[in-house]
Image (cartoon, rainbow, N blue to C red; front, side, top):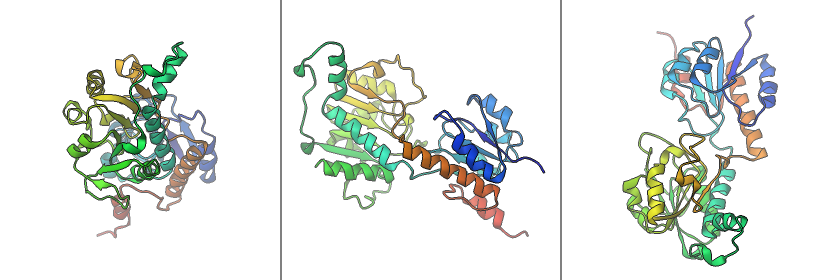
Amino acid sequence: MSVVRVLLTDLPWGNSDIEREGLSAVGAEAIIAPDKSEETLVNLAAGVDAIVTCWARVSRKVLDAAPNCRIVARLGIGLDNIDVSAATGKGMLVTNVPDYCVSEVADHTVALLLALSRNVGFYHLRTKRGEYDLQAGPPIRRLSSQTLGLIGLGRIGSAVAERARALQMTLLAHTRSGDSHGTGCRMVDLPTLLDESDYISLHVPATTETRRLINSETLQQVRPGARLINTSRGALIDPDALWEAIQSGRISGAGLDVFEPEPPDLSHPLYCDERVIATPHTAFVSAESLDEMRRRVVAQVVSVLRGVTPENVVNPEVHRRSQAPSA
């Protein structure tokens, strides 16, 4: 009997204990990639029955090298690092865990909002450098007098709306469908949201339509002095355009947890500016969220290896095709 092999492309938490434990239930061998380069993944993909990935890019080339692969499981929510179309064409299921870290990312978003509103990052850096001056910072406004504009109202955007309402902020939102999803947010078009918001928070996936959504043109539509928060995907923002907007005062501050590429070039003046708070893609992290995500992804892989449909299949047409009767 041939050994079932599962390729683990990257494990940012530093160990594979949970993955190995779960895969042992079906006698599967975990193959740990030493790095997440395409060349390395291509070399390791031959003969694997499943691929589990966090941030590594699972390209068509990697999938071509894994003809026996039955599932590509994403350790996370977004799918922009997986060639879903190629996987679908090859009959491979693709899964993710879209709801494991909603509270963590929403909390992190509000943490950035509060830090920006109270000049926490600014004063922290100044005080650490030996300057103790409350007058050095930008003006502070009472949050209950401020408007938060949410671009995207999925699980996380809706959770941020709930938290912001507790802070008595005015809420605006923009979605492609115009649906408020029961949040009670006033729905507006994008130019209106940019013009009326004191804080703008991004909660949409990275797609062809949303890439560089925040650019030189859209930043010109922003209310002068607004603050920008991104806990979604780095590809949504043009960092050079954002830096120019901060220099001009159009944007007075930013809270960024995601970047493109990751890690970014930290010598870029945007990330060195004291008006910008930067965290290393940590919004999704808690002991509970990581444990939940890892166990659920392993369960998805084990289900497929046992011939059972897993949860959160993002390309169900593959399953339907496999179940269709022969002509």
